Image (cartoon, rainbow, N blue to C red):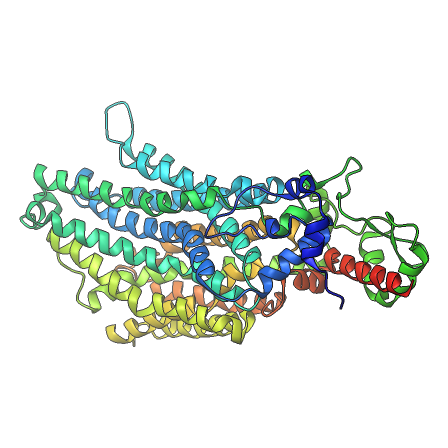
Length: 597
């Protein structure tokens, strides 16, 4: 293939054209690749060169900084989940003498998930409509502000403390939810093809670091207030001094969730627009006729590619371009007689595109597998009390000991199962592939939940501990990571963020259902039948095993995306035409025709 001499083009390109091609944004975490080729007048060729540079770049410090900046949201998400769990224990001593009503506990835990669903769909659609650059960073501002606001609220006769806290947690959930599609697709669109899965996996693996950070900060906070807590051997003995300490502790713990976001906010607000979005979808690049203001390539009735801006060499270009009849037929079949650009994103086109089974089944697969996973993923937490007691970090009624043991015990479990699972996925996902890891994870989780469910009474405490740790491991070395990565790659640029948001929201809906409905089944008729607490837990584990089995079946709706560029994925699975490639072929044809002349 003939290569363009970029330096000769740069010398012959007027400065005002170069200035007109420059785009805003760019920092040490997200490089502005389009500006590297501002001297290229043809937008399609500029796009092709920018994407080629992204896809073929090696792994280095730029990618590491991208992981850190994009991963902050997931670190904050998991930090908050841990913080509210231990924070609820602290709050219970402040207002309820150590025994918070179960309805209040569920409300505070579920409220963030409700907001997360709203944020995932809302921010996901907004990023496709307005662009990645205009939206990225907004979700982090929401999280930072609401973290701080939660720390400032207090009880009063005219204001219900739980209601205000719930409201702030819903709003914070909106920000956290927005980070799922945004960080995924932005990381995907700025990542090198060879290591894209590992980079996206490392971004998501920040969830483990968030849990660890939450446990460490909670541990340090509890230790700092030891003198105010250790005299209280029960909730009723928690006096004013003890309650004041608990009230300050939960505020410190929740407030620290804003710190990582503050550190990364500048980089998010100054990112450049994604090269893929800038010329594929961006409305600013649309001409008055609604078509992209790029070097237009139209399909003529005789199935020959025709450069509508070059009439002198038309016959020679068409003759040379006829070699690419496969691409022409694809253009003709997908877009009809008109400019070879994807349809403009709209709700109508979204329904038209995903209303076709060959495309819709992919969205069903990504949303369905995420839903099934998150329903059962919540089931692991139902065993937490037993697991912590098994390793000697539960059972104490002393306020200090109970809070301290909860922090240390959860820290041990995170390091034993979750953390290794995340990083096994990161190190293998580009070699083994997304789909094999996802299938393996669902198979192992189905088996493990079956063991817990059908052999619960026969398992020793240590046997249950082993099953619990393996469940945590294979959740993360399996579908918990792949359900995040695949939607960020598998969809066309114009719907990548929306489809990822829908998939992620499906998962959170599954978690909400598990928390509000299935979670309550663990005590189903236990008191009426005179059985011990959690008597129905084995049956709930069996239900979760069924969800894992359905998730396994839905894996086969999702194709493999490893070792392909995003354009190759869209072309293969969504019949999208890579207009940059066709344009490159046109330029080569023109050069060949010129050489012959």
